[in-house]
Image 1: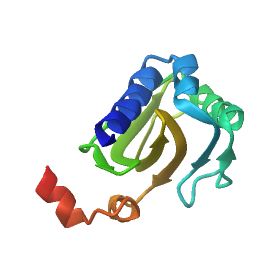
Image 2 (image 1 turned 90 degrees about the horizontal axis):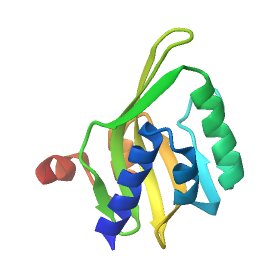
Image 3 (image 1 turned 60 degrees about the vertical axis):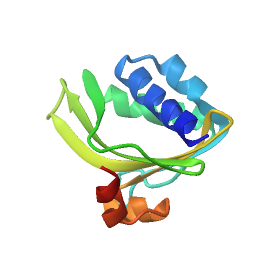
Length: 138
């Protein structure tokens, strides 16, 4: 089951970078909850697929283009997948580069929860992996 969950998360990255927001939307459960990292300008969780997509639309409207690239392995434990990623925005305004670890909870091939962490070790702990275990898996 875990490899299937990793494939859902890979599909999210592919759809995001292809700017296929319809495909992104279809990966989310209607009752999804998305939590930004502490210190993010909008710290309130996004509740539901519609609110999540509106939030993503606001983010994407900030720049002319953006990319989301994995910078670590995919770590899967049960129904959760963690991945460190770099998000870069370019175009209008100053260029931006943000690195966070995403933790996805996937059930029945849908993302039901997504949480972002600044600290990679903290995110790995959230899925039950120590940073030492993560380095051993790489």
